[in-house]
Image 1 (cartoon, rainbow, N blue to C red):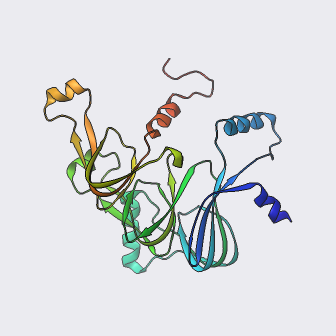
Image 2: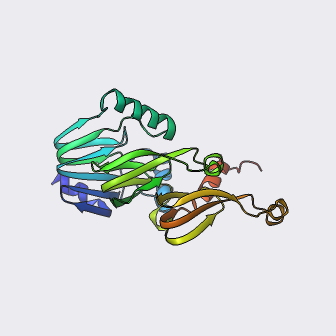
Length: 271
């Protein structure tokens, strides 16, 4: 069967499900469709360093899913799409959310029974289930969620985090109960997950991308006095306090630096 030959070329990296819905992260084992030798060389190098094409698949059984606009690739079955505005008040709230968090104002919802495939990507995804334990994520992290999960605006609680936190005054808050998929900045194997128990975590950089809403976030000087700052060579530290989860991507800044210094000609920028 043609359908079976497709799935023979697929690995399921992760799967999460509950009644009425299943979300999977698919990975293509091989890509052999290129007809240009130069592009084939590029693809060979991509595969050699461990990159792979991935795709999120959602199976619905009389249920619904909300996605980022433009994420849909195709769907099969008895599925209908809608974009709920919620009247004048709902429209205003969505426009405010868009302006504050830079997340899309209108997220399409797909309901019914069938299969939904989202856009293939060389990026990285993670699946999780919320159980009335709200989380706060960086901009662009949200990818899709079950209808029981609400996508809202979360404001920074203090002046330091708003001015120096690197994410501005507002982030995205996911709350409620249900499954969701997040587009994370690094592979899952490079994500460090902490469960704080009335503890403090301080990091030098903006690479924490998810935290429980119960975690207090501030930005503090690394030393109490200016002399201490000069001696330590550090400026400020992102500080997370309380009880809950904190997820970070320690290698994120390394990839960013490599991307800034990369030149297609093979020469390092700045040399």
